[in-house]
Length: 153
Ligand SMILES: [Zn+2]
Image (tube, rainbow, N blue to C red; front, side, top):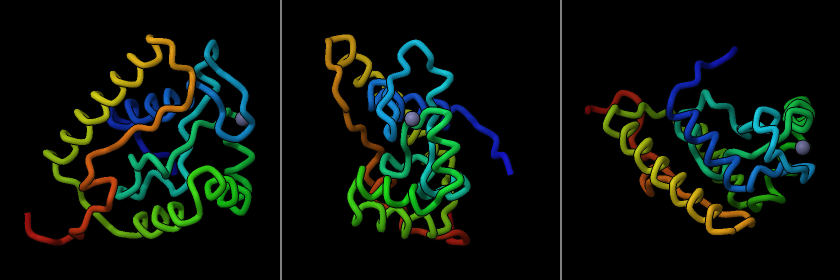
């Protein structure tokens, strides 16, 4: 099932690909001049709200690697664990399973935070930094949203 992409997904995708300086996390090829062939690839599906914008649930993958890893969950898990560490990936998998409903002010805060981070990464790129640059989300999101669906607003 295809999930509709909105502005939050768009800025998150830019962040994930800017993080590696447009390099595929899996094969290492660069896509500076071919942005359309580098994707933002999720380890746990985007349908899980708790990890949809989690920095350690996403990778920059070229179209070929994205397809290959999508067809091979075992290899994707190994690759994810090598990239971020097994404990981090266990945590992401645990977070993904927590049902959350993000309120509109929370979506706004996530969006503004990501926009600020994207600006920071692009300034560092403009300044000549060619290395991987990690980005964050608001701590309450990145560390795990603690309330569950059905709780009072
Ligand atoms: Zn690749």
